Length: 323
Image (cartoon, rainbow, N blue to C red; front, side):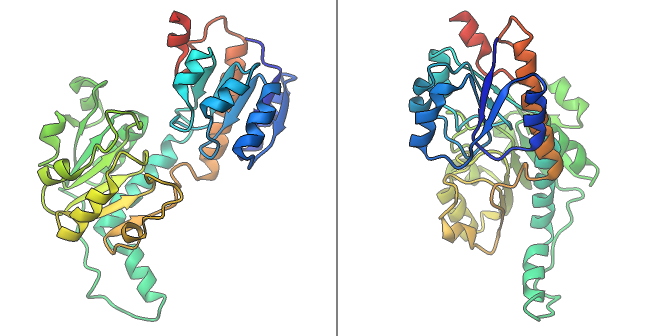
């Protein structure tokens, strides 16, 4: 594939630009474009690289008459209209490896923060109140962690939390029990998971089958006091159902990095005393930003040197090839 002109529309580490420039590719970095501005200029580019801020809509893709490839510097592609891209034979690729460690570490931090109320204790101490009695936590050793989604991030979380002495159970429709066992995970069906877990963490894409995966029905199947962690994709947890469970005591806490709407305006959930929340920081480490920038740009080079669309990270290569 010939790629001569690339637009980067979100903030991305300079490493991506440097790699592409070495192949004599013209790179334009134009961030904070309005949807209309992006539609107006995309016609001039062979390729587009985004993170999570830019929405690559049907209108953007159809305006990109020269557009051949859309690169997502990260894992999730729910900000890209993959269906329209496929219909227009525009390849979508992501960078699945670069933020694995960062996202897994944040998940583990959430688990530990729900076990030991460090955030609340810190906030109170900074007001000048020395209160040892109100912040008694629990140990994670011996507790059961359920991981829904045993891809790169889910597996790394399993390895880390096994080191804390947790029992780890999990489910993934694309993973065999034998594969799960290699990472110390007891594989079981979803219906077996809900009632056994003390902590549940999601590591799934936002697709039709995962939208609202944690909801009032599944929460009521869980142990009373279950703790929910979501550092994958907003929309996989029904936030209203979660709030009801927190208020009733059915859920004992929640660690949330992603939300149905971002920026999140659901203040009743954000301000809940049992919620630890962050503004979508899963990939926000210096190391991860360099890694995803390098990964997506190197995938562009691989694509340029290949006769196939089925390169590493290709989301819709097979569909385009078969079409």
